[in-house]
Length: 192
Image (cartoon, rainbow, N blue to C red; front, side, top):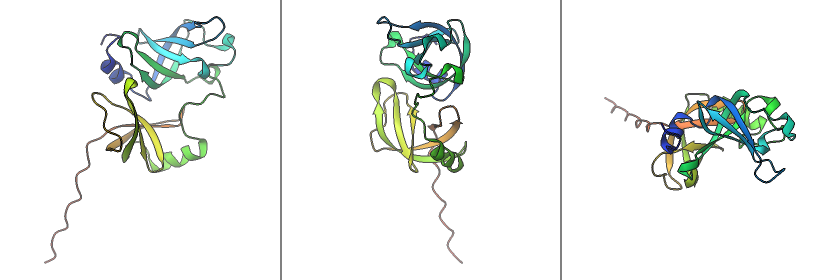
């Protein structure tokens, strides 16, 4: 996979995956305004942590050369020449405690985990698509999740059959992947 292959990048680094990364440098394009940190994943300079997810004081950010863990939040594949994977720092020392991450509040998260353990199949409705970055929002059973797609996105309102592949304690997100449509219920045998 080259570092400008969107499909390869999405397959190799799916949403929700936990990966080690090495901080390459801090980006501050406008003087003191911090944009975030560029991170190498498996040798590719494709990871990025937004400044809002890092500690408020730049002196507390992980220094260039630091290797630490991240969760993949989403893909930024609008420009093939500059693909990025948006990351969430797993170490609390490298994270802004006030930052949000598209996850669920604690109480709701506990309920979601009980209703949808790993391996559960769900049927969701596509409520939005983000074409440039190849993810869509799916709602089901009073909750929502982002799901990556390859190729053409399904139309809004489509029904998708999905399987829970992970429950992220770091970000309180339910991670889904497409699943084959379940077989229809067998017809009952006629009574004799």
